[in-house]
Image (tube, rainbow, N blue to C red; front, side):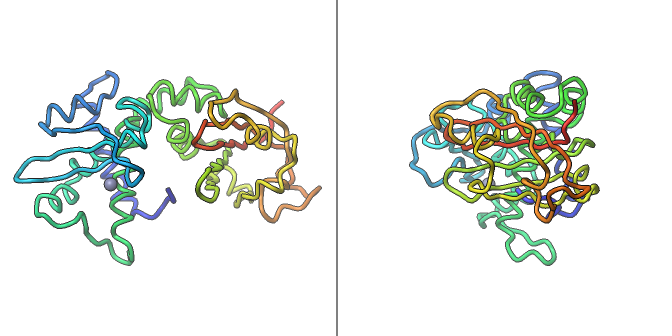
Length: 278
Ligand SMILES: [Zn+2]
């Protein structure tokens, strides 16, 4: 989920394609990946395939088939299932991905200086999925009408039937206001991103040490919430020095920030940081 790995022209191309596919097949309507699979005569199966993958697009003798793994996505219409279907549709609609599948080679093409083309392909399919499920124009309209911070992110996720995290990444990258995001995962190290609004202020790297956070901050409280359910949004006022690397207590950059956190059930905890507004 790192950004700026893809060349901007390639990014724009995939974003444009995703929006075109969404608005051609579901104009002004709810984005329904299954409808598109049917239209394109891509057969699919939902089943329990263990823990190895979320989805897969397979090609055999001119026919495409999508597998969606209910062990990982819960049910066929969950936000995670939709993202998986969007990702597999990316492999179908992005010419290079589809052609690679048609020619029986594993999806594989090179971009200069990229040591790991597999990851690029996955990143492109994820980029497609995000902009297919949240087409840029619809997203921009929704963004204007939603409140800032985690409340707006939750509203966005509901509007587009995507996960809170997918919505948060788009909001963070779209927003001109300073915004930072951390995802505390159960099974992997925490992941964080800081948007341009903050980096231009000099607040660049988010600290990712849960054990160093004050015990009464929103994130610590959300982490203590029942991991089986989605909790209510928690909020606290915190200092930039407790969140950003290299910011000294009491320095000019040690501003008061609003910290909001939410437990995403078994998917961990999300934290949103922005400048505190009275
Ligand atoms: Zn893939």
